[in-house]
Image 1 (cartoon, rainbow, N blue to C red):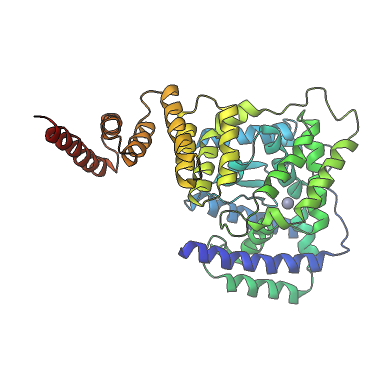
Image 2 (tube, rainbow, N blue to C red):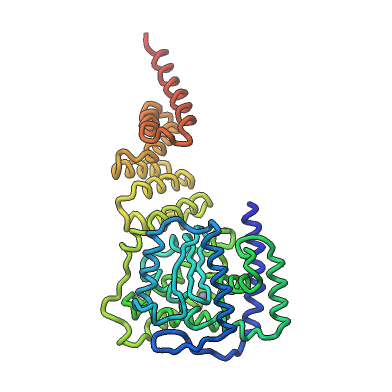
Length: 414
Ligand SMILES: [Zn+2]
């Protein structure tokens, strides 16, 4: 709870900072991007920004917020490499690298020196590798096109910088104020809150070009933003307002669709890859987690959409079938009890020794007073998961129900 409050305070601060940023960057001059065949002139002020970004990035990486799945991180890194045409050395002195933050909010951000942080909540929201490539293409463009540096240069007036610093100190603790010095915090806030509308549009345009060049289906770019839009729910603290509002997501979807149609034919390669299976091999467990959160928050439509997607694309997932059962039980609309029972039985068809399916079915049957079958499933659950945290509780239910069954039998027998 405390965390939620803190996050809200940080977000309010971010909105204020974002407004300040857009105000000072209106009508700015552009700087040359960094990339293949583009000579980069070292620049002191920019180097300071990068070194602050390096410190801020290191704070994140050692601060316990990172997701512990090196395989996933390496996979996302390979997608970034592909977006950069396996030529990240052409982007020196940038250091294009991906890190995964363990956080259910749908968000991602890039530091000016090329480190990209992607939330697990974002990966759970995406549906294929082409959409991930679009996200990474967008984020890395903020670095290659030196957006943070440009916005800093535009905010030359000292008063702006001071106003900035006071907003930051007002943010207090939380994820952002990790005491990396004012500049480090400014860089972090800028990276998380996004840039001016103009720079976001540039990141979308260049990102899409990188995605198409790498052989991914450019139509997935607009779909990626559409998924962010569909997830927008201001009531939920798990959905960061950033991707939904900066700039207006509906416009963004429209623009991306248009841009995908206008790509030069030599850029749109024949492969048009989507990479769904490869993506799911690495992220299905995060998508399961997303479905579970939707159910817990009563967002049944989103949960159902997620579970339908899993049923279609990861057909052998007993866990997804159990989640479907839990969704129907939680929703308890007309016909949901039967649907839930069917879902648990589906899970057992996929894997007869999947403990959570026996538990789900056992409790459902218990409520239906079908005690003997219920007890059979609950016993099987305990056999399969003897160390489960709810093992004692389940044992109590079994004793009570088995007792009732025995009592009934006893009363009716001569
Ligand atoms: Zn952006």
